[in-house]
Image (tube, rainbow, N blue to C red; front, top):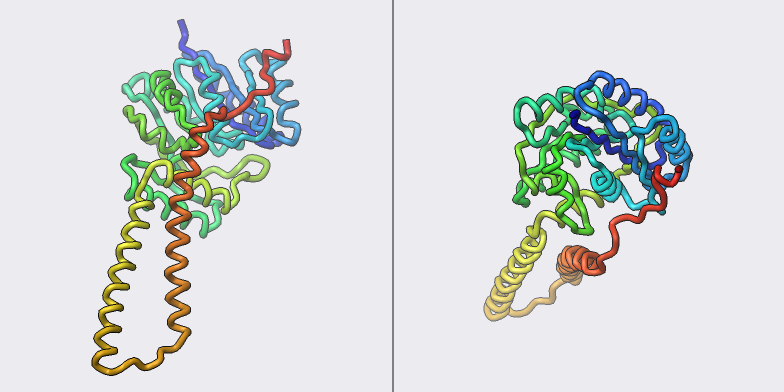
Length: 313
C-alpha cells in the first residue's frame, strides 16, 4: 500500500499565487508515483479571493483540502493547523508563493526513505532579491540566537521541510501558545538533512513580512528559546551598581582633598537619562517574559476554524 504525503500550505491573501502553486505541485505529484498526495491549504483569514479559489480546487480535485480560519491568526497558527489536519506518513510545509520549490520534494523524499533521515530541511545559500539591510539583520539574528540559545537554528533555514509522522507528532505534542516553529523543529531533535538551494523570488503577489514584523518575530524567537536577555539585565544592573560605588568613592576622596566645586548639570542629566534608559530596557525585557506567561496561562486556542472542505458536501 502506498504511503501518503501531506503538503501543508499556509495562505494569506495569495489569490494570485495559488493557481501557479497548484500547477507545480500537481506536476511534482505526477513524478512521485510511489506515494499518494493530499494538499492541505490553510486560509489564514485572507481578505481577497483565496478561499474562493481553494473551494474551486477542492471541488475539482479530491486531494485538495482546506482549513479556513475565522480571522488572521498568523503563519505559526496556520502551520500548526495544517500539521494537525494532515494524515500523511510524511508531511511537508510550504509557502504558496513558490519560494519553496516543489521540484525539491523527490530528492527530499529520497533522503528520508533511502537514507534514514527523519527530516529534510531546506536553507537558502543566497538572499538574492532581499533588501541588503534585511539580509544583514537576518544574519545577525541567527548569530545571536545560536549564541544565547541551547537549540541550534540554521542561518537561511526555511519552514519548507519534509518530516516523518513521528517528528510531526513530536512537534504537535508541544502545546505552547507562543509558537516559534524554527526553534520547535530544532528542539524536538531527530536526524535532519539540510538541502541547500538558491533563493527563488515570489511567483506572484507581495510579501506579508515587513521589516517591523520580522523584528517582532525575531524577538519572539529569542524570548521563546532563551532566558539570556534576563541575565543581561542582571549583569547591566550589577555593572551600574559597581560604577556607582566607584563614583561615590571618587567623589568623597575628591571632596576631602580638593573641596566640593559645583559640577555642571548636563553631565548629571546625561547620567539620569542613561540609567533611566537601562531601567526601562530591563523592565521591558522582564515584561516580555511576563506577557508570554500571561498568554500561556489563559489557555486560549492557537486558532479557530470557520470552515473546511467537508462543509462543501
